[in-house]
Image (cartoon, rainbow, N blue to C red; front, side, top):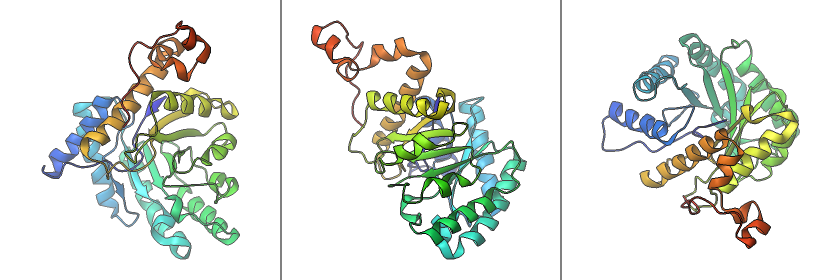
Length: 295
């Protein structure tokens, strides 16, 4: 069980790039995230050398502020960049970047395909599946490739196309695309599920109780288990002010810590009305703190 970003995080505009990167990585580590990133989604056309350099810079910062935590890279996917017409071409080019990242020691690459870019017809679905099969062909087993769909409903693509490529995990935005739960329910049990449940809109739609429920449900599907479940914002946090973005991270980090600590510790921090209406009515079950601030 871990928490991580779902793509972007606001970089401090008043800092030099190296200092801004350090601030972004430090915010994740202090919040308790278990898989770190540089807070950017690198376009699929990014030069291979630049992609590797970005990961190495983030890794080096993380080694100082959060020794031992893994660092991922987020990249734009073939359809996000090329659409149906150029997806295969983009996939071939991006594959070179993934191979170079693997050779450099990067453990996780997160491929972002926004829901708005997903095809909804049979020809488009076939093109999507083919492009992502090309992208992942021949990747070394040490590289964990994760497919992230945020910003809406992923079910228009369909489970066959979505799970056809050999990704090892999938991130779904279940706030703006709640039908994504239907995909979580049928995702192969050996694949990880990262639940995009921390509200990235700034409207405060989720708290600790909702995150705990979401993680538990994802773990229950297809024998997946909590060891194959992560939690994340529902999408990019780049549009939020720094305080609100950090509040989302803090909530996710707290949820990950409490879930990992076990049911008793988690239950002590939940609003009893959310887990046991009868006990709450009788005053027999009290949280050790108030309901968390909405982010």
